[in-house]
Length: 225
Image (tube, rainbow, N blue to C red; front, top):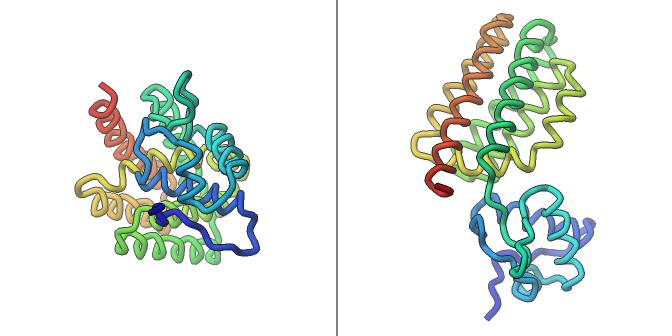
């Protein structure tokens, strides 16, 4: 009997797009483990799509850094690299800190209301204990933050890293007690922005990233000694 867990419904989106979204979520939700081989025939059965679609999806996931080609074995779920992980978190700390600072300085009442709504949605996602929902809501919050900060180029950079950021985020959000700590950290960021305290907002944003960074490093050291 084929595993129907990943099977997709037809809609206005193309099969390739639907299959790509489903595979991306499956990797981030650890349905497929880091290092696990991704064999075309079983994927065709699980997704309910042709082999050509599966090949296109795997090529795209390879370009995004979620899949790697292993000589003699074919595609497999990529294992995050500790050195690149450090670089990603360095960029996140810098850019998110800059955005939080600018937001505290110049955000309008309307922009703050949008940001407050995005934060409420994020907390609802945390309450649902559903990692993909948390990742989607987190992305929306930061999109609102960078928009309010008028840091569009910075957001383009972050958006380009979002797939890899979410892969790392999928590891940190399931760690013990991360939910409570993350909510407290996000509240600190929002409180500083609301109070128009740019230095405090930047520091809170950087602390939040550094907290997740520490968890990611510890996780990768255990998984990839």
